Length: 399
Picture 1 (cartoon, rainbow, N blue to C red):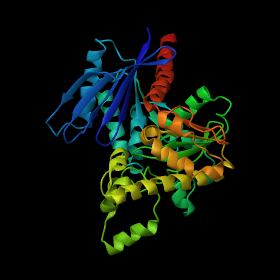
Picture 2 (cartoon, rainbow, N blue to C red):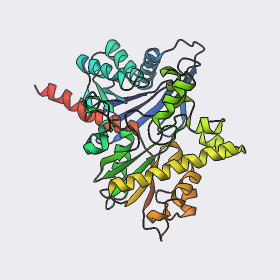
Picture 3 (cartoon, rainbow, N blue to C red):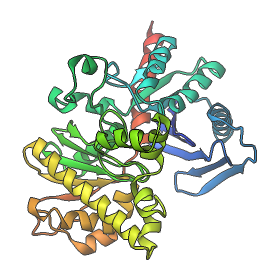
């Protein structure tokens, strides 16, 4: 019988989930999410064809991540008709320097992941809540932690180091990089659709509410735009991206802002939202006639193009560009603007292919291949979980 793998991807106010049947390839059974946790929680579930199969609303604001996890478990059991789940995989934002790949969860691992809260205080607690809930309510079910930082562990030391005193670097202050599960999936898909190009020098642009770029060579991360936290690098939906640290010191001195104020500013009130004064949603900004919305989009594109140049230098050249993420897949105008400003790299757009959202959007005259590849972090997690948890259970049976 094929293994059924559940995947949970917990954010600050939502938990996305999916269930796959693993039988050599990951067959999606259904996916959904509990959103607006803490305000107006809502459950939505779709089948593999994108058809809605169940939904539920709660008026209670006290539904937290642990309670939402229980709702997801009960929903999954009902949709599976009582058939068991073989293992559960989780996206965990931060693995520090210790976790270089997927890890089977036990009490000691949970303790280590809790220690990493100090490196990702806005993300790690939410990632761990479902893990701890399932371990308490269904301790017999294997769980696997899959890390957003692990893909970037291949980077050379010079790419990971800040110019700070060594004792600070040795305490864990370094460039970790994030969105690694997405980059792992997209680089794998590129190998399937363009095997002759996949091992060359490629930049993947993961553009969404969270945005970053990664330069890969031989399918391995060489450099990326996010650093110690997921607020560094590109301008994002509500995050500022790279910022002169002197600005923060100025705000502390002149505006009397404390650490919590600054955290709220750079994570929740900046980016597209802050510059436009309207929205963090690219779709809304595209429809707006407010000149500030246009300025926000222009700055978003400028920062992407500038970082592409930086990563091309880190790679020693560039042989291909890939767009992914919600904006990277869904907004043809952003792709067109980025490519127009990358002509110096030999990039030339096929406008018709771009508007249609085809998998390959470069013109025949382009010396730089350009792809559009949707990401699927949940599928990567399912694959890693099945490989680790199911092989462990078979090993136990053989004994």
